[in-house]
Length: 298
Image (cartoon, rainbow, N blue to C red; front, side, top):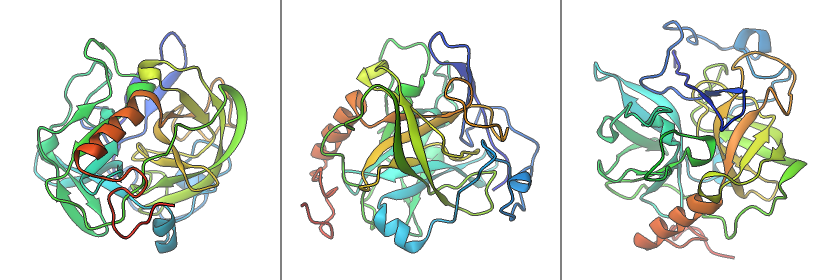
């Protein structure tokens, strides 16, 4: 999928510029076709955040291990659908989690309407309930931040696909520096990767103190590209612990730096986890099985 979008903001008072990793309407676009035809695995050919690119294609067995992995598609002004970002069927067969920046810019101005988008999973497309958008930002918010860059949507009909179970508890991670091995699952792929989807083993390297909604930002060294927004970060036990939001210096191929060159994901905790649990209950979903009868709670 060619093209891409970026949005720039400063995270609180930090001077580091953060680039949203999503094909998002209203954001600046690189030249048309800039990512078309990319098929090689060499970093020089594909571009990446870091000199090492450990991404590989997402396989069928990976989708079984990481259920709920889907893609947000949105129509352009001419009606042609384009892949926008990763999205997750989670907690219930009608509940989808994704980034708020798919629909709002940093000033919280509308960049897309829900009716122009749909959710794809298991080879099928599902429409959203147009007025079901639940944004993570507070009512009095004036800017979008990493830690409130989440949104929930309802599907018109239940998806016929396994769902991602809700976390039983917030991630048990200390605030500060650490090395937590994770797998970044990107069902929407990346504009700087040859395949339609990808998976990479990487690590969370720091957890910042909680900010918006009592949620913390995780800084990680996973490669990212345009379209990678909403990718899931899973721990070694297969638990979804964070959702990708933004990355620094897209395609720069610089070494990871905890202060100046890293990826940012929001942990599934605080207001996000509370909203997920509430939304799942409203639909009769089971937090541990996602309301999917094919999955059994432990």
